[in-house]
Length: 360
Image (cartoon, rainbow, N blue to C red; front, side, top):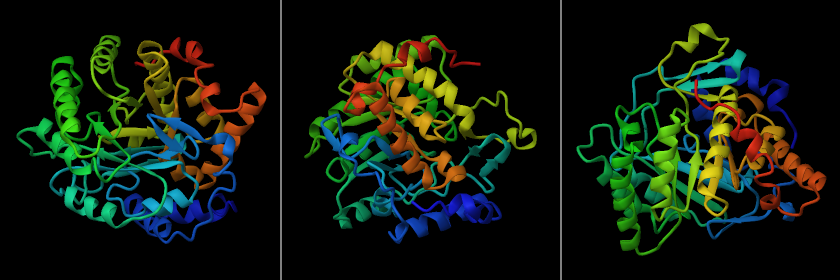
């Protein structure tokens, strides 16, 4: 892949308002004309997770393509999967602008988008029209004004089970007031019970993942683990954005409300990922998200217990070259370890990462 982004494309993008730049980037990806990673189809990277076949372990985190406008374009860049959403039953505009901020010194992003999206009907129509190959996930959420948020998740399961390859229940965004309360044990048990019922009633049963926040106590982690193990979930995505501002250099923007993503999230989210692997055991699928801005960091997510790795904010700073860099690093790590599949590389760093703090 020719790295035009690092040779001037980033400078041009950063001259624009962050949300405007995001929209223009999506339009460019949607054309399908951008060069893809040369090693995306390396057979050694093929992996099966939750009974789904992925051409490689690298995917797009939810939020980059909320409304499923550029799914095929993203897959052509070399990703093994992409996740649309977060989508809510009814369209909603999200929070007032400005609501997206680049912390360049920290290679981080703060967002308080507020689940801005076109709603179930619009995304479903786009999914019904597409015919291309590749694994597509849909990240489902609840409307800000909903009187029954669990019912919104049930509606998402029902609506997208026949259209997506997997579904993600997102209860970890900090930008919808009260949403993270669904991570508390009693509420989580109610939610997962209703989700399981909805999946059983769906015409097509697809894997369901739970996306959690990094801002958890040890007790909170234990509660989530207990409910996940007692549920029919296929896996957990670790993690969403953080409310922590520890160690940031962009002091002026650090005071902006919202969730922080990007490089500063890496240590916290990866330590939590390793703890989840230790407590959930070897069989449940884990997807590692947060702070991946290099090939080495993509490999560390796998070593810390991830079956799949997702990126988003790292692309803001590294551009599409991050895809090829990540896949190259995975192949090199497998070769160095003398293994032939990503799954055989997994967990080699779990003990090391689980010993690191994920709070504070």
